[in-house]
Image (cartoon, rainbow, N blue to C red; front, top):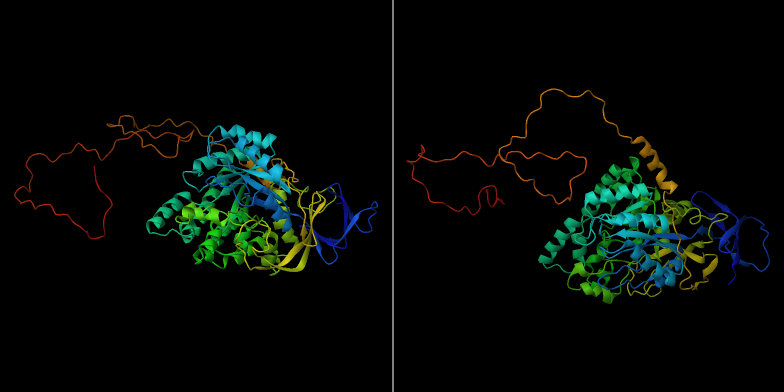
Amino acid sequence: QSDRLIIKGGKIVNDDQSFYADVYVEDGIIKQIGENLIVPGGVKTIDAYGHIVIPGGIDVNTCLHMPYLGMTPADDFYHGTKAALAGGTTMIIDHVLPEPGSSLLAAYDQWRDIADKKSCCDYSLHMDITHWHEGHIEELEALVKDKGVNSFLVFMAYKDMYQCSDSQIYEILSILRDLGAIAQVHAENGDIIQEEQKRLLDLGITGPEGHVLSHPEEVETEAVYRVLTIAKQANCPLYITKVMSKTSADVIAQARRKGMVVYGEPITASLGTDGSHYWSKNWVKAAAFVMSPPVNPDPSTPDYLNSLLSCGDLQVTGSAHCTFTTAQKAVGKDNFTLIPEGTNGIEERMSVVWEKSVATGKMDENEFVAVTSTNAAKIFNLYPRKGRIAVGSDADIVIWNTKETKIISAKSHNLTVECNIFEGMECHGAPVVVISQGKIVLEAEKLSVTEGSGRFIPRKTFPDYVYKRIKARNRLADIRGVPRGLYDGPVHDVTTATKAVAPTPTSRGSACPGKAQMVPVRNLHQSGFTLSGNQMDDHIPRRTAQRIVAPPGGRSNITSLS
């Protein structure tokens, strides 16, 4: 297979311009762009007449090795990246999920080792923080400085497993801001989810519909609003993964209009289908949709999210691809909380976005390139090496046929799982040629990939696209106290309280440094007043005590007043 290629007759489409030109590729790099190019002999010519030539897609969210109850996903780094290439995606950013309490660096090494052996396309890594403690600060610095990781995910859900408290999130975001990294968040209220799960299981609801019922969209929206509040205080850029509902997307859009540095990532599932399938009579089909946050049951959600993606309120598209076989999903056949979470979307992402946004007239071809590739490259500091057709950029190129029609089906997909959540969906727009690292991997519907050929792409911190505004705000946010004369008036004495009450321990950990501690004060419930001796109503006979079963105003939950 030639390492020298010339793509002729196509229309080059970047996020900011479209023009007709030929592209010459050598040694995995775009060397020339223009008309009537002078190229050496023995060059393979690819005819792109009538098609658009676009940067390869970047899937910003995959989980190809995420462990669950000792199982790993059915589509591993080989099958997952092979399917990605078949769909026009030439780079992925996968999530490293360390065991809570284990070393982040050890988990990073484990993922690198597996991905280097199996990946068929270029890849990079996000680091998920599954259990926060002070010792992680040094590891974060090492990952950023030596390992090429510039994005970290915190969880607001999965209580008693991965969930961080608000104060921990504030601390982590402050550290990430100083390191110049991107803070990613899985935004759901884990406390409410856990209570709802218990309630539904008590009611005897054990099927996949229990999953969506225990994750109402309000728990996603509330968490998005809460983490935006925290990020604003910490002046840290924020990236919300897996935007699944209209209301959470609205919260992100409103925050952006107020000037916040926040990015929203809808995924193939939320853009292409809805969660009505959780109530399917077919358990296998219903279980295939189980993921968190869940695919929204409101059928108008995909159209709405595509509209927000088209107008720039949401910026990037991932797949959150994490697939388990039917047998693996069946671990939770009697308890929906045990169903391994994750859906497909790595292969379908580009075609679903084209079908739902471009074919419907919501976005143009340039915006399509932005949301499937360029914006991701800019946010995660891969640009212009990735995400652009330009001289000097990597030769990750897709020749896209805008008129091609294909029907998504588990019978024909390149995944290893038996179920496809987009089964039967017709898509207009598909890749006809895919070039990865300057080599043709898809041509004439024939996929030829090499296991282990994918390179790890390190990413530097402080991406300009994200941090220019943060740096400017840091300069402005120089807080100063008000210069005043010393107060020399009377001061009330509060140290002579009769009974000191021990302060109530809080679940928030240590008190905030720099905040004045409350002085113990007298408890007014502990009175020295008693009713001893003769009373004026002693002549009225006492009535025997009666237990009131249902008092007016409803039952009280006060059990004792001691």
